[in-house]
Length: 383
Image 1 (spheres, rainbow, N blue to C red):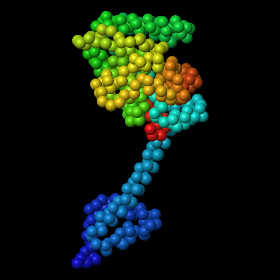
Image 2 (cartoon, helix red, strand yellow; image 1 turned 90 degrees about the horizontal axis):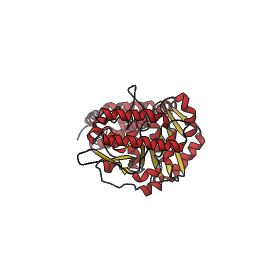
Image 3 (tube, rainbow, N blue to C red; image 1 turned 90 degrees about the vertical axis):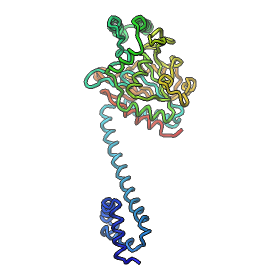
Image 4 (tube, one colour; image 1 turned 120 degrees about the vertical axis):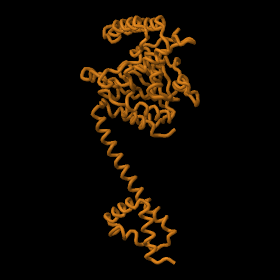
């Protein structure tokens, strides 16, 4: 039979061989809190127990350690969250906090099954500035590999772009001009012999990137079966290629509502599919043109929210960078809509109109983390 001194020696060895420094620190902390005069007093009641009790002793001690470490980590996380919120608040403008809180509560109470997200692509999901340079749009990055036709498309841009934002042209006339612009541009892409390889090379060489937090937002919403409709007056095939090259995965809940190309077996553009979508008609009326992102990226497993069920989701989180993007929810009989505007440039000139139009305005090309936090609030009730 072992002596008491021998048992003490064995116990001391076991404790030291199992992260003794952590246990010593914890015992010291407990003694400072007044539970014991010193760490030896904490261990002394156990030193004369048989050795087969030592695992239980270690379990007890590690349980105390784990609880303290967990509490410390929670306190640290809370502090980090507060610092992040303070930083974000400097770039956030909310015109009517009471109205916003009412909308958040209503959407949260209805649950994620009634929510859909509608988002513009360029300068909303993507960054406005990249390494000090203006990020390219999904349409602007396209290089046909034919300088003559690239120059012709650029000439159309220089002519029609000022007309798009002219305050003196009536909406009906402006709509016809946009249809004219998009139609001519699409004709040049076909006539110039655009290939899908040219699209892939254009994206690979483009100065385009998603805002920080966009992927996390997509993942969060996918886990909760909340559909995301990406509306764009650009080209769906380019948007899908940007997602393929920059994110490297598909999302079951994302649909692209944009102009879609049709290629022949050799990869040459031959036509466009469906109704023309331009900057003044990209809204839920065009939803029937939407194709699930995972279909286009070759991932056909899992359920897909059909267009009819999307229209039954009457709570909307809308993301855009132009006041005109508010029209993306036209055609949807929504009950509650929270609109988020990204004011990336010319802030002093445009802040007042953005603040009066959007529920939340983010300034200076802010990352997407504020929207991630908002989505977390809206989906706090499980399906």
